[in-house]
View 1 (spheres, rainbow, N blue to C red):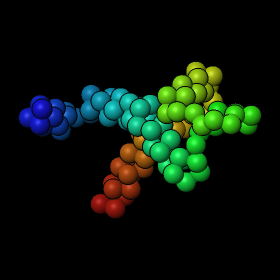
View 2: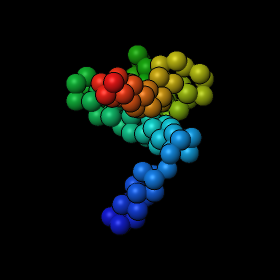
View 3: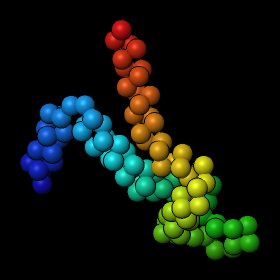
Length: 104
């Protein structure tokens, strides 16, 4: 598995231009769809307590409940949900801009 990951990394590094940017965008969106809700759930659970789906809930919801609400928010066009989804790519772009400004 390590050799296949290394091969995928080398293939990614060899790419330039539009193809590499599309792969980066897709990986960032995948992270925003799968990893960001997990991080939000874990940090929220530690700092704030259980996930309550509504103000009338008394039992905390699970990670699956948070993720289903997240996907529902995306499908409804909620700005907050879309910012979470696109956040990893935006941070990547900010890093690239900062790095190029620092080099200049």
